[in-house]
Length: 457
Image 1 (tube, rainbow, N blue to C red):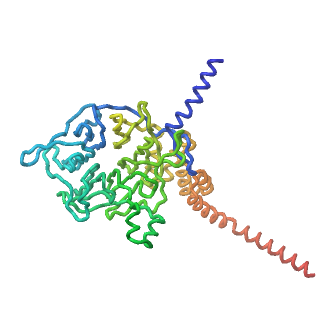
Image 2 (image 1 turned 120 degrees about the vertical axis):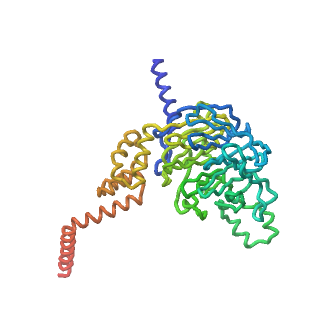
Image 3 (image 1 turned 45 degrees about the horizontal axis):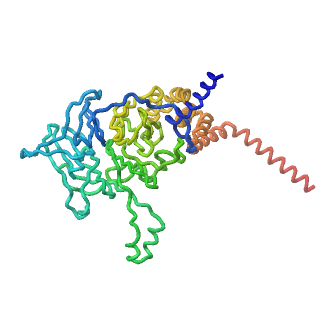
């Protein structure tokens, strides 16, 4: 009896734990248990102190080891420290040292560092020779009362430099490849409230007493092809949490009704917390990966913003996070830097994750019919996986199996897809049975006419 009780209690307590660590959402926004797309492969320590950024380039990982005032360079296997950047040399031979660097980026044969503590950006050769030093811009559009606090940095294919400054809410700062200040890019929107409307009808004196409606600042960004993806903390709004900006600064996602991050309530016992997106990374296949530092969850969406997987959590256990600060993807692995635990967690793709990624790649390339077998396999792993039902519905739609398409579109909660399948099903039904329908209509019409004549007589 005691043995049976122990087994029973283990089952009761084990199931919620597993569901909490791997879950997804159905089309109604309800959290549901799910198969894991990634598992923790390893947790690594390199004598770091509050590391804030990680970047992969040319088979090396570059880590902004902020508290130790240096950039660590690790080999692709994360086994050896290849190089340490802590001091640099100006062309005249003067030496200079990093102070709390929070961002690092590699482009070509140059290393770009957001040297936060020194209020500057350093552009250096890989030999530590400084090429350009960017300090606070002297410009009418930059508030000279603000300290220049670069935190994140990236470079586009033209060599233009983009910098996120911790105290700037008007977008990321843009510099030319020579370090000249160009302006701001990708500013978030401030919320339009009743107070904004009332401002048109009150005096300037009253306006000055009111709290300014300031947009939320950008927390991090990444670049993929010709687009810059930005993220920000929620602060009560969802429109700018994740943005995909073209060269003109237009948000491609603004026209889509996309919800990024957890729904309310979150699938846990801790209650709902608004997302606080601290970093974003776009993988080679276009998948969008980002960190919610409030919950420790790592979210992965495909390039069309369909949710694929959720992993990670705030936890003191191995594989859990304290303060996840940066994320980087390399091929099938995800690397998450934790500034609280001073470690690097490596997630590797599971067999389920591999099947999903293969199906999604074919699906997004327009090979819907070719995904039929994969989606069916995926549902054997996880019968709640909503994306698989959507994929099957599209595959059947392309194959002309409209009744099956309607069935799986209903499972996926995709009304638009269901309507497409229904329209085709109705068109074919009417075409095949038009003669019978006409005869039935004529018979009914004849019966009605006969009954009316009978009443008249």
